[in-house]
Image (cartoon, rainbow, N blue to C red; front, side):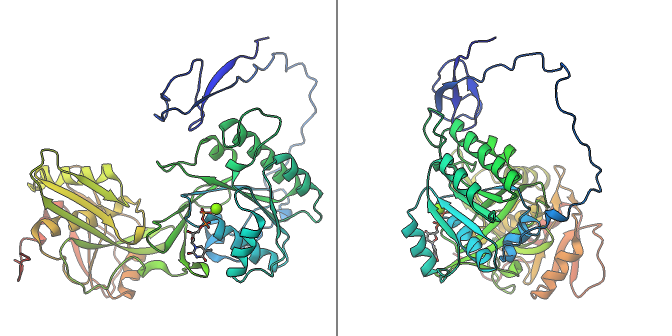
Length: 460
Ligand code: TYD
Ligand code: MG
C-alpha cells in the first residue's frame, strides 16, 4: 500500500502539488499553498461480493415527506425554488458586510415565529452581538436557538440531541468552524471540506436544511474551496454594491429549482426589506434625456427588469486608452467596440470608454448588447437616445442584431412603466401593443439613428 505522503494544497482552489511553489498554477493565487497529508490510495479488492444489497425504488416513489419549509421571506423562497427542501444543504456567499448575517437572522426569526424550530450558530460574532442586532430589528421575541461556537464536534452533538429536529440550521460562517481531529487551521481547505461534509451528513440524517455562509475572495469566488460548491445542493450569491442599498440574491446552482431567478432586497435601517416588484428600481424616469444613457429591458428569471446602462466615451492622449466596466462583462464590451469599429466605422481607439450599469446590478444577458451599443454611440455623438425608448437585442460579430427571447414580457413591462418606443431586433415576434416598434437588423442602423438628428445644444 502506498505510504501516506506530504503534499501541498492551494487554499484558494484546492489544487494539490508535490512540491511547494510560490504561485498556484491552477488559479494564479500567490502564497496560497499549505502542507497537508495526501489522501491514502484506496486498496483494491472491493469487488468480492461482500456488500449489502441495495433497495431500488421507482421514480414515482412517495415524496410526501419532502414538503418544503417556507422561510416567509418571499424573495428568498423564490430563489430557493419555493422554500427549503428537508435535508438539503445551501451555501450562501457574498462580500463582507453585504448582509448575509442580517438576511439569515431575519429568515430564522421569521421561521421560528411561524413555529419551525431553528438554530443559528455563529462562529464570528458573540451571542450578545447577535441579540443586539435582533433587538434592533424587532425580532428579539422569536424563539430562535442561538449559540456561538467553532467546534464542529460540539455543533453536531448539540444539534443531534435537539428534539424535535430543527427545520433550519445556519452556520455563520463555514470558514470559522473546525474539526479537532485535523491538524490544519480553521478556514483551510481541509478543515472547510471536512466540516462541510459533517454538516451535510447531519442534514441528510436529521432532515434539517443547513445553510453554510461562505466568504468570498476579491475575485468573486467563495474563499478557498470551490470544492464546497460541488458538495452542497444549492449555491446562492448575495451581490450588490455596498454603496447602493439594493442587494440581489442569485442562485448559481440549485438541485431543487431554477437557477435564473433572483431575489431583490433593499438594505434599510430596519434590516433587509423585500422588493417584490423591482422592474423600475434601476432606471431614472423615461423622459430624462442625457447623452450616453440607454434603458435595457432585461429579464431575470421570470421577471422583467428595466436597467439603465450608462456609457462615457472620453478623448485621451494615452497610447493605451482605458476601458472600465462596472456591472457587465469586460470581454463583451471589447467585442461591441470591435464590431462598432470594424462594421460601422466608428473608431474608439483614441478614447477612453467607461460603462456602468446603474444601481449596482450585474447584467449577464447578451440581450443587453444593443442597449450598450446605443449608450456608447449616444455618448460619442453627444445625442441623447430618443425619449421614452428602450433597447434589447444580441449583437453578432458581423454586426447583425439577433432576436432574443421573451420579447412580449419585456415590452409589456416597459409599456407599464411609461416607455413608448422599443428599438429591438428585426424579426422579433411582437404581438400588437401600445409601443412604437423600431426594428434593427444591423448595428449600422443604430449609428445612423444618432446621426440623423443633430443636437440642439452641444455641451461645451
Ligand atoms: P452583515 O449582515 O453583518 O453582513 P455579512 O454577514 O454579509 O458580513 O452586515 C450588514 C451591513 O448592513 C452592515 O454594514 C450594517 C448594515 N446594516 C444596515 O444597514 N441595517 C441593518 O438593519 C443591519 C442589521 C445592518
Ligand atoms: Mg456576517
